[in-house]
Image (cartoon, rainbow, N blue to C red):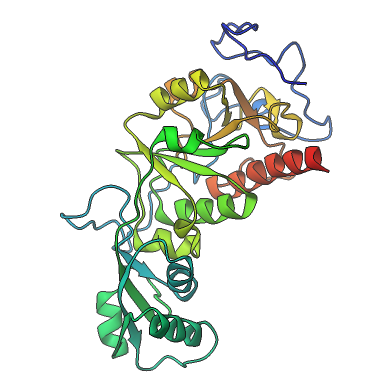
Length: 319
């Protein structure tokens, strides 16, 4: 049975400004330890602590360089064997040319790339390893670099235009390209139907992102929004439940009762977590129970747990 949306749609909000969980407790197993049960590093209990890298700055591998002519999502340089093969297999954007190291063995995925390029009449340039390394913007291009048309962004309305209940992922200011790439790969595997990224102060589709995503960028519709808080308000108007993920969340992700409806998971930036305004606008703020000695997961690992939990709950309804 569908649940009424809290706050103005049949529900009420608690004193913190966040929707209540309809009178239920946190639902966390008594044997587990959620982030909300731990004191914050400042000694208080109200600070928002996100799933991230403890404030660690992204690694500088040259990937954050951005062509002055490139705008939007980006994605014009694709590195890594799996990413280049999926670029060709998907066929959703033009692959202009491919550069292949003369020292790489032409077997397995490399052989697939060469065969697909021949079928699609894409030029394959054989270059020295040093030349390929000088072109690369990742630490290890795996012997292949492709140049392609940029990824076309979609609108938020496009993501909502679906016969089935949308399953969306919104990312609040993630700046580490490896983390974003991993999240996109997870999202595609978990059946996420669309991704929402901030237009500003966040990483977009760089070579490291495409490589870490292993081709997921070719299939996932992605929308850029001016402000994530505003986008969340628009999602609410469209009857999409928004669920922020935070160590101090009020209910366990394993007891999320709106997973089978139109839903959007919202993940915060590395270290900082969800911004205050984004957190306040989410319908729910959920946590992942922690059972071991460490007190957090990084943003990609947390995203994997949450996305697959939603996928599990949605698939159970269809059984």
